[in-house]
Amino acid sequence: MSAHIPTKALLLAIQADPTSAIAIVRHLNPDMVCFFLHESHKEVVESQIPPALSRMPQRWDWIFTPSPESFSACQKALAQRLGPLLTTWNVMPGELVIDITSATVGMASAMVLTGFPFSTKVLLCPGPLSSSGDQTPEEFAKQLAQTDTSANPWDEEAPRLRHETCYHFNHGSYDAAVKGFHTLEHRISGGMKPFYRALADVAQGYGLWDQLLYRPAWEKLKGGIKALELASVWGAPPGMDRLIHLLKGNLTFLERIVLDSKDIKPAVALDLLAWAKRRGDRGRDLEVATHVLLRALEAFAQSRLYTQYHLKSWDVTLEQLPEDLRDTCRRQYCNEIDGKYRLPLQAQFQTLAGLGDPMGQRFVTDWPKMKSLFDAADHALLGYGFEPIKPERFHQLYDLVIRLSEVAPTDLPEFPSLNV
Image 1: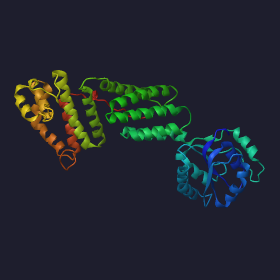
Image 2: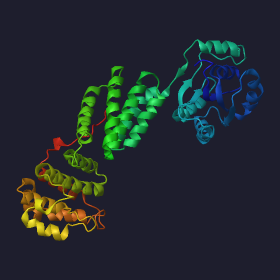
Image 3: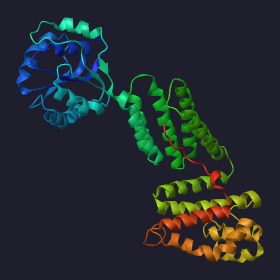
Image 4: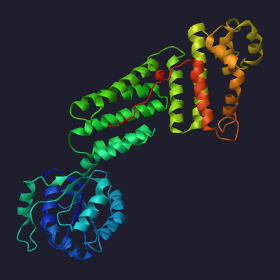
């Protein structure tokens, strides 16, 4: 890092000899400096460092450790002061440089540990430091400029943090996954930044999809897959070819929904069923998932009525219905405001059965056996009851929807499992 490229903030250890501190501040040219030291060395900072600098930092402060040799004392001092100080200075994560050249082992360990969330650069200058002052700041700065003395602790931590972020994605915490991948993108060094940016876009795309925001999800996922393909060319963990193949399969499914201009989109029924299945597999949000299951079942009925019989369930005419259902529809399903006839779920299947459709006939034939499952959904907390749905009831209802719709589980879109 050359002197003409300013550093936002510097955390600098200092003891009795200020030689290295002067050289490092000159070299990094920071806007803000926080000195980490024993209180007895405060006079060194105040009297010797400002006269040696041609450009003073805009702000500076210090954090005192009661015992420079004690890791626990150093860590406690930094944990209490460093975060609030950086917040006051408006220093963003990744903008802090840590120099441990003059630190004791206890100080250095505490500085790296506490500063890790804020820093992407740890500096340890080479060569022995002369306690008698034989080495001038100019000589030290020359030695510093000729040697690569820095390390980014995030580079070695990246695989572990990537696995943690994949865990968030695989368990449906898409916002956390997006944040994790963006954090890695901004913290690591070198050529893997585009890879993590692409993974963040992919995670965001699936998060939008999970909210049933199909077009934004399709657009984000399309760009993310393309970026992931390009990033993988320059080096990526193993297994990317298989992952990209799965992502493209999901993208094709999304296109079926996004590019379908018809009023009723058959693929939506599949997606609603897959949405509910993901919740059931994780044992989460079963109340909501149960009602989405019922909505998926209705979507299958609506799709069949529309594609096979050109009938919209929310706007039917009496002439379209089987004759034995017309009187019921006239009396019960007419909207008083607009005068349109809207068929509820059970009436949709009765209509299908009356039209000779196998799916409707299965529903009508098995209704006495199925009624208890529908009652369980109605009596749940998000129905009109006061008891949560039982997991076994949810899974029975899922199996029922699969059987009635004759959908194979392999027809459902499956979100990928990230293991990169």
